[in-house]
Image 1 (cartoon, each protein chain N blue to C red):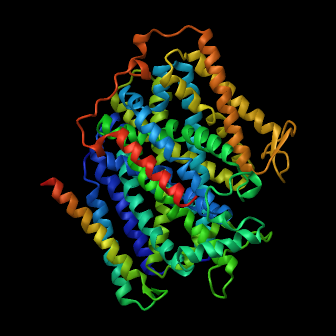
Image 2 (cartoon, one colour):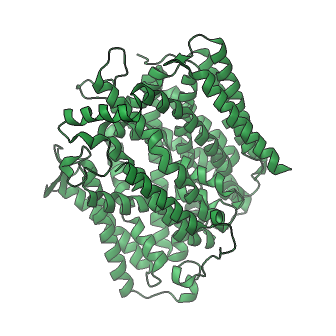
Image 3 (cartoon, rainbow over the protein chains, first blue to last red):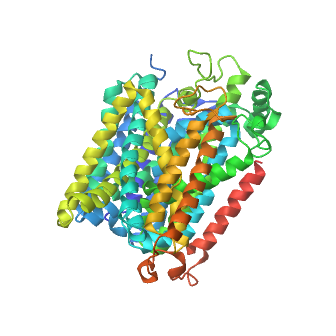
Length: 61
Length: 570
């Protein structure tokens, strides 16, 4: 009712993905066990966020 | 001393999360026009949303912290709280019970009891449920305040007021819809926040095979068989063979049947999510959709605890180690928080912390919305002011949200000063809850069950639980809040085993007494029970729907998948 929940979820993960992923690119302290975890998490979150937005858009058309 | 230090990026992540949570409440405010919007979401929500909310409302911070603690303390046997103690009951409530909850148009679980039985049964359930939600969210607030204090050095009072304040704002503005929508958002955040923890921890421990090898050392060092931490069924033959101190009969009957069905099938906190669904079919699919992630959750919340204890016992310099309490035992509750600090760099640490707060808030909002509904419909409208306009009840719902959360905050402060009062209250609620499922089972599937029977049965079940608890004691415990306050007739190998058997006794007493008193009292005519009892209600038709829309098919799929998990990790 009211709003499509996929829009806020999509926007939030897009924002968090850009924020944390961007921080992973720029800061030197993001690597754990040889993996830049911030960058990878950011990429995953961005993907989830965009997928949510895409599904929401597809259904509203 | 604070165990973790947050960087500006972590505060930015927390800020993003709080902004979205609050704006969902704010955006929904103008859609809350009637009390049905506020308390029932106008019965308009799709099944995948109510399904994830169903799961999330139950997933409080205490569950996340507690399940990881259990994973460290008892190993993979903890998974039975999911595989035995949740999935079968979730399938049952979806396939068999939802037609009556949703189909009767009751607005709450106590209201169903009123329709099916009588006023006094509803009153008993409504009052005890309302009190329980307030106290249990108070207890989780208290735990959250302590955790944030020890982890981040945040002030207890400020932590409590801010966390409760945020939940209050979004449930006050957007009612059940806001709680449900936020629960879905929180679900994704919890999964995304803990997945990297599992990944990094497992990587560190040398994968699943490295982990099981280390867990063998954990088990043998405590005098158990090598697989006691990594095999879920192989060591349940006797209570002495596993660290949890339970055997398979007590586990399956006590946890799997009585406690689990009592919670998932009768607790309004979860059932309310399904009642908000947009159709009968969506309501029935709600718990079934929830069951799929639920069966995988042990990997997210129990596995970190198992990793924590494995790495601690391995004892590498600079590696992860569980902190100890002053008395020298491990502080298992710190497994997840300490792992967040150990494995997550700035940035991801903010995400992990947001996930922890999300789990806390979803649990608290669940309590708040269940409380305001039961208070307004089952107590206020039924006994205090019967015939007011709808706008008045909408207003009362908002006031009840403020009052309920305020009372939880007060309970949290009481808990911080008198810890054993809370232990005793939880005990009393456990006695009240234990027999509930017998009442619902007889009510829904035996048309001869009567109101007098149900009421007498509930009282007898609660009494039986109290008596059993008063006469038994777990090993190594002193008589008091742990039991044995009449006399000690029997000692159980563990507190868990005692809990399971308390539940079994309570359920049996309630079942027996309801049966006898019902037969001795006057039955209600059949036509009054249409839509409320199985044999008098037309089965929902679903032959035309696609297989994944059909509750019975979904239920079988869910049970089969759970069986596979149990076989793989037996």
